[in-house]
Amino acid sequence: MHIALLQIEIYMPSCHSLKDKRSVMKRLINLVRTQHNVAVAEIGNHEAWQSAHLGLVTINNEGEGTDRILQRVIRDITNFDGCEIADFSIERL
Image (cartoon, rainbow, N blue to C red; front, side, top):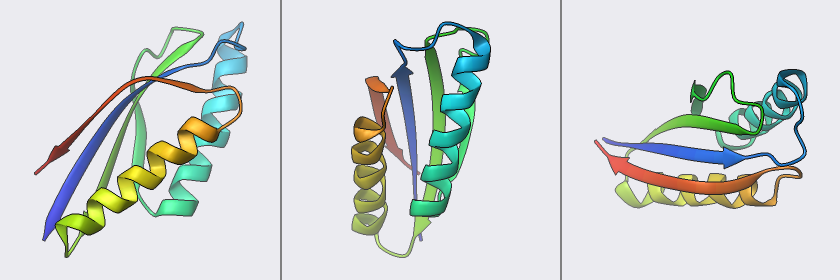
C-alpha cells in the first residue's frame, strides 16, 4: 500500500474578493475530486483573496500509481483557468 500527499500553493490573480476565491476553489476542488478520485481540502490561506493552500492525498497499491495520479492533478491545476501554481511538494508516506 502506497500513500502520497501533495501540498500545493495556488495563486489566483483574477480574484478580488473572498467570494471570487470561493467560486474558483469550489470549481477546482470539485474537478480534482471527480476526475482523479483523491481526497482534497483547503488547508491554509483561508482569508487571503488571491492565494490558497491545498492538501491532496491518494492511495494506491503501486508507488508509481500514486505518482501518476498526483502528476495528472498538477497538470490539471496548471491548466485550470484563473489558477497558477506557486509551489508544491509531494511526500510519500
